Length: 168
Image 1 (spheres, one colour):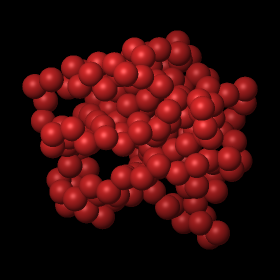
Image 2 (cartoon, rainbow, N blue to C red; image 1 turned 90 degrees about the horizontal axis):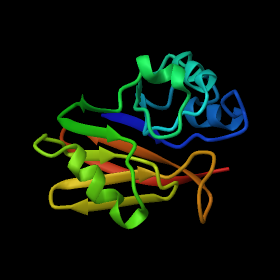
Image 3 (tube, rainbow, N blue to C red; image 1 turned 60 degrees about the vertical axis):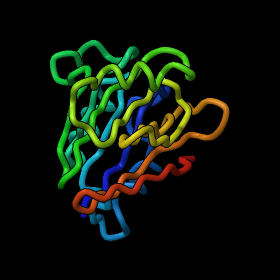
């Protein structure tokens, strides 16, 4: 079983990860609570990305449309990862909320993906269309219309469980 934290759109005035973020990642004995972190794009500061790398948790990140240009050589625009028996497409997304899933779907046409993680809208959503799950964790630090949010994916073989949680 794998447990993955999913975040996106970390636009914020801080150059460091907010201290409350560490409470999501580690228990009281500093044991890791997640097997990886998916970041669906818009890492605004390279320092934030470097802090993520220093957590010693696998990071699966993509760029976006608002990011530190120094990240272009280290982070792809889109990617597919495989965890247990599940394939996950990761992309930031583009367009307005009504069209964003259509735009995200086009990014992975012809690819075998079970779950697509994306961001851009700053609004969380989980939608199943056909056999695919479209998962937007919202924004960790600048949610629109509601609170800041993040997502959790649990994978057990080919079974996928997803949820959205409030942050701060």
